[in-house]
Image: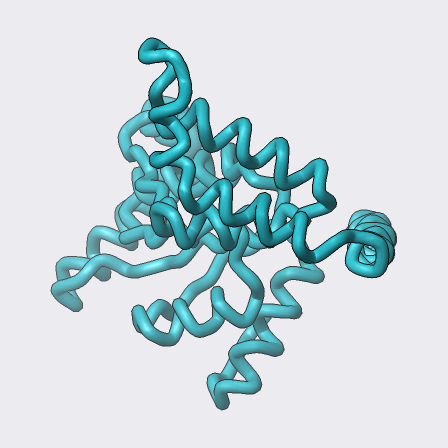
Length: 202
């Protein structure tokens, strides 16, 4: 576990150093043009052949041009967010039931959750937080679906969230549990909750 945390910290330090170097060498005007191309991708699609006039074809081309101008993933993400908003994945439940029910402890847990829901009138809630810039959430979706299958009401966090944003979302939606994949990330979310005067147990 601690080796994993150390390797993650080293990779993060390397990424931060590269971002600082990129910020020092990039031409902001070119970056602004690249981001603007992403935001106006629909207008540009009319210049393509009819069979290629899709938002995604223009978006890919604009994103590649922006990256060549040393635009960071975060800046590209912000431009995409301005163009069409955030993507919010919905976990699909029901896929992991067969394998889960082979494990006696899962059956016991599901029974306890059902009793809690019946007694309190609501399902226990949990948030699955996917942070960082790796751009996919396959593993988190599997976890969210499995948790939903055994009886939790699951909120799946947005991609590219910061720890502080995840902490704020947990408070706004009154979620008592937040699941994270790394010890370092859990600590950062805990720090964010602490800043907002919320008691935390890791």
